[in-house]
Amino acid sequence: LALMTKAGDYRQFDLLQKRQRKLEKMSPIREAFNYYTRQLQFDTKYYVLNVDPKERKRMIRNDVLPDIKSVIVADLDLRDLVRNQVLDAVDDLKAELEYQRKIYETNPAEFDAYELRTQALRAKKECDQWFSFIPEGDVEDAMVTVEKE
Image (tube, rainbow, N blue to C red; front, side, top):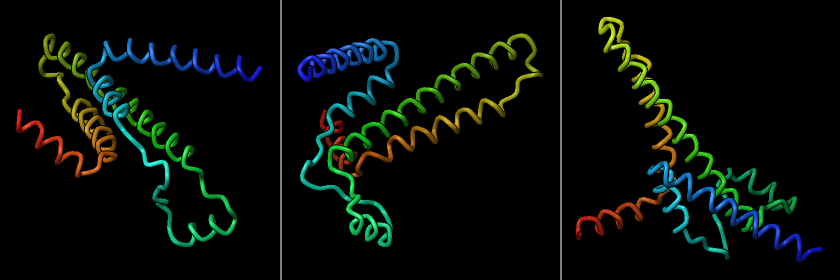
């Protein structure tokens, strides 16, 4: 039974991977974010616990520190969540841009840039959040690599 369950897990993982690849073909943003995430390598010996000292002491005292696997899974899940927020914000921005373009073509006086600006700022905020996961040293290394090409 355990072997069948494990085989089912692998099959499910393969199906999810195929679905992601198909979605990536339709979205260069998704493809880029997923590519970066797939390249991540995590240290499996330790992690940094980002909580205030009181909470840290409580967690140690009560033996409720998360295990390393849970920390890695939570990190990847958060990246996926924020990636999806970026994609949603960009889709909303595209839709608003198309809507305002049609308004402008029929009656330029009714064009309203406020919602367009709001959607653009939301997309920027979501992108900034996703990029905040990337260590600054990685960004600097990437810029050096790009400048060499």
